[in-house]
Image 1 (tube, rainbow over the protein chains, first blue to last red):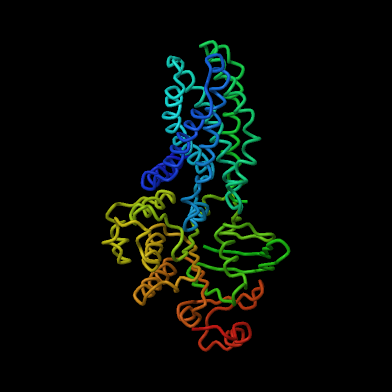
Image 2 (image 1 turned 180 degrees about the horizontal axis):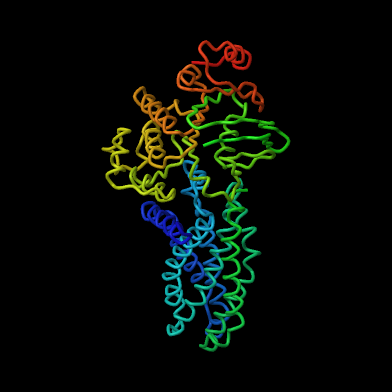
Length: 225
Length: 235
């Protein structure tokens, strides 16, 4: 079986389990929405500060929401020692990495599809025409978050205080992604163009490709050691 | 198949769980792995299964080293852990289909139903595993390994959760597995039952292999080793 068919098999299993349990998606969705309401009631967003503050606030919500998802990423495998069952099998460990990354990416994209328009509604923003470009940048940032997050979630899998440890080691490593994504979004909101943010976009793409490749290559060592 | 273990040792920090294990096993052997608590039985099974790495020494299947990257060799090894290694929120048949796909075992829906019928789980095939009793989960694990057909089957305390008919089912499966050329290594504290079934016995004590013999009738050397290391064992 190829890497992709193994990935699809594991992803299908994870989606089926999530469909039945709905614990990760609902937690992430409610937490993300709750954060937006907290932001909304905490401060106003003056028109001249929209480009500056919107990306930071959105990414703050995505980071916390995404970390909640990552903390539950291997829950199904923790029950009944199912991770051992997977490691016992001839499964390519790279497929496990790709499946878990894709699963978390799907959950985060679903949350973002709700959270971003809700942010526009709550803060009464009128730049709806920029949403497709913002979604593209957010998607690239989310890929980077999920790739790096899956590696770190696997590293902290057997740690006792993993919920605390995961953000502690993930957030500093996420700085290049957060910086590039926020700068890209800021550029889009200021100028309405994505072309002005090309250097940041390249950095984001490069980060995604490098860590995705690295993840596939090193995941067997990460998960088995 | 031939399983060779040479100078196998495993340490957890400064504690040696296993030291200098030498062993040769051949097709058709059903091996009883005995020893008091903490002797290293589960560690040895985990090493065979490739779930942990040895500190020193090697394991070879038919001359090929069993290393973390040897994914094709992993298809030859199964670990039957009575109520573990099953997804609670998948149904009985979904679990079987998932693991069969993972091990690249083609099977028809009829074969899957037949396998479940053979362990008396046919009527429960659409139930979630979470709703099964421990004994039923163990029966499902037996069905799983019937379907996956590993060459080396490892079992860790399989008797605890099974009723009388479940024990008969398990022992029938293990006999058939060995008759088909497979190797079984079973760790258990149910000494009298395991001794009836096995063709070979190993005794581990404080991480060392202190007894390694084919079964004889009578078996005075085993009785001596057993009374020395397992003075309160047996059932």
